[in-house]
Length: 75
Image 1 (cartoon, rainbow, N blue to C red):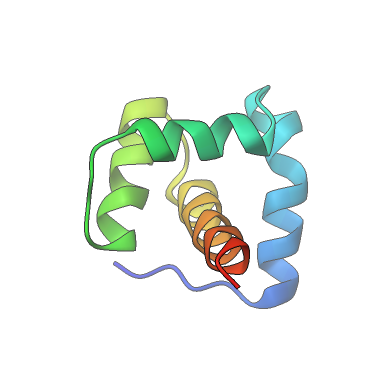
Image 2 (cartoon, helix red, strand yellow):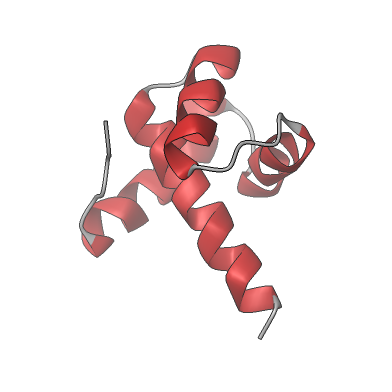
């Protein structure tokens, strides 16, 4: 199941995550980095949702944002 949100929806989800979860984005990025080493984003999203009791929409947005940020650091 692929959850690709529009850029606007993605931005809104990311902005709401701290209020909804009580954790800031860097904390979630740390959880992703210290979690299991999955190859596919969908696998990471599923793990994040199940392990941390998140909706799949928020989990997918976090994984997508983490990947976007990680790629930007390498350029």
